[in-house]
Length: 219
Image (cartoon, rainbow, N blue to C red):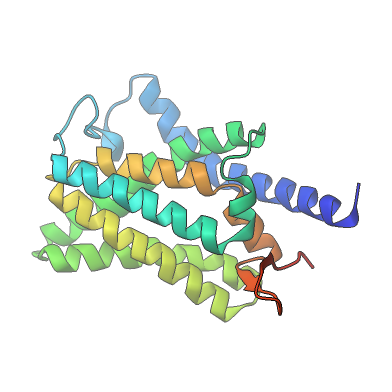
């Protein structure tokens, strides 16, 4: 086993540990919902109960997921290596994606946007509040690495995703179903690669002097 391979394996274990730690608190309300507690902010998500989304919202949600995944595969080497790789780690990611997509969409779309609406905010304010609230917490990975640029990049990219999913929420008559589906697909495809990139700072493909595309190395 080469040093590079050992480094990749170590980074993946760290990434999966972080993912499990982040997902565990969100799994608790999900478990309660599965056992019949369909109250609170996870009620009526739009799949079996609650407002049904419009075809436009579903189409836009799936398009957003496809474009976001394609962007990450092109620009984040660990995602390119892991997004369709058959591996046991995807079982961990699958469970985490269900919890994260459901709880985060209920918080950053339903709670945030419905609160702004209740305060008299229009659709534009709701969308920007949702995007900002979604993007800022994701800056933590750059903060941990003491890299302001990485923090801004993480907040900006995830904030943009939050803006787009907020638009889906409005176009879907405030149904969470298409937002959750897009979020789930993105998380399932991108992880653990995205967290590996956060751990190793392996963010983008770089052009070699010969013009060929190569991956930046794990330090």
